[in-house]
Image 1 (tube, rainbow, N blue to C red):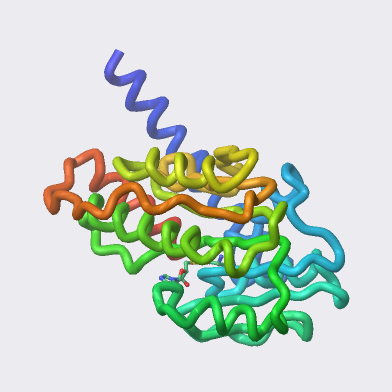
Image 2 (cartoon, rainbow, N blue to C red):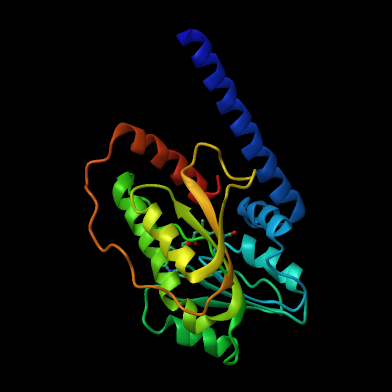
Length: 244
Ligand SMILES: C[S@@+](CC[C@H](N)C(=O)[O-])C[C@H]1O[C@@H](n2cnc3c(N)ncnc32)[C@H](O)[C@@H]1O
């Protein structure tokens, strides 16, 4: 029985490795800077988040895979604003790249300046903090980044606009989901095929922004003693976050 289980787990791992290699090879062949580009393509096919002419803000944009996909989809009448702590190589004429911290109080002003005062139709957030391997702390930091994006939505996202946000599952996830549900008419949880099955990341898709967001639900610090299960998931998240 245990042997059978181990065999199934082993073949699951081999399948996941093959899937990762497949998307990595396709990204190289098709000129995308990250395997993550396929996650956005798959979710955009499902939810029709952007089209020609859309104004898109891509938060956590380095190395630029999502910015490349967005730039192609919105075309030369649309606009993409990328924001990351790290510098990003130029993408295309319709794409402006800002090297800024999403936690900085001036970030929404910089974004609005780049959009010449207009709000966006779509906010993307594929944020991952530098992972420490202490799972609770990494989860907490990642959710804090998501909450910082929600905090600034009223100043950067048009009413009726959409938001696609990566979130690490864990203790704070339900609070984040609740906050998203109070900010959008409809919220779905998505796990695209290009995302590793064993990673704790999922994507929240918020449709029809109400124009307002509720206050944060929790500011508590997490425990610094991760369980073994959480450490396993941290290794996957680390690989997922590097796009390896
Ligand atoms: C998984 S990567 C994004 C990959 C990207 N979507 C792509 O397709 O190329 C996560 C990014 O979040 C960025 N990040 C983390 N904390 C940030 C912060 N406080 N402000 C801005 N960007 C941040 C990291 O620098 C990293 O580049």
